[in-house]
Image 1 (spheres, rainbow, N blue to C red):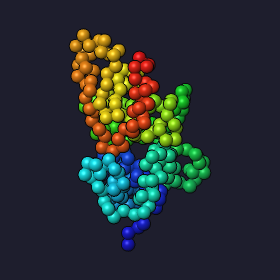
Image 2: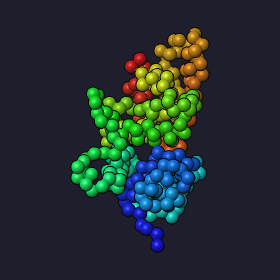
Image 3: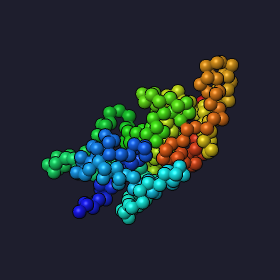
Image 4: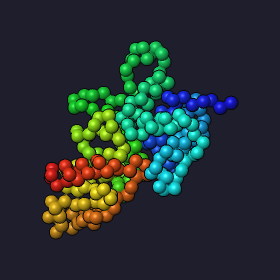
Length: 254
């Protein structure tokens, strides 16, 4: 008889779903194999559970992907509880992993120690940034959404609405508040020299256009002005974040 999934197990499966392109949800995926080992389940069971979540994902539906239809009520409950609060999802998944991975004695010695969290040294650390980066880059297939550059060391999970202005509970690690950009276009976006419209087209500022007499500026910016970005597989950039950038950042910071 199949073992019933617990809420904690489903939380871990959903956290991995968020960070995994749909086409890579299969039993041979190394991340799925590792999670299966932690849960004491088969990789096939974990990948099937992850596919269950796709039936709630409207963006996948728009692409003709419907996921598996035989999921449980708990699948829907976990989706509703966490799909709009990624900060809470990451915190909760860390807590679950802590309970599963360490001994009772270690838990008593380090009751609040999060798994894999970097210690703060000087500036305030951006907790859960690794989750945000992995989710955003994964959903954009590891390529800059403007240029298509696919070198991970040169890619950034850029916040559309800046970190400092974002709600820590619902916006800072929300993948709908992210774009995958290369380092140059990330800097330009952060400085308000370019933006993306609500129909997902690149707009170049006058400050950059003033340098269009330079071939290199035409190459890096001019050729992309008005071009539609490559959209992510999941977590389409949210209108409210784009409008914030259009109104408060674009051509204001410089």
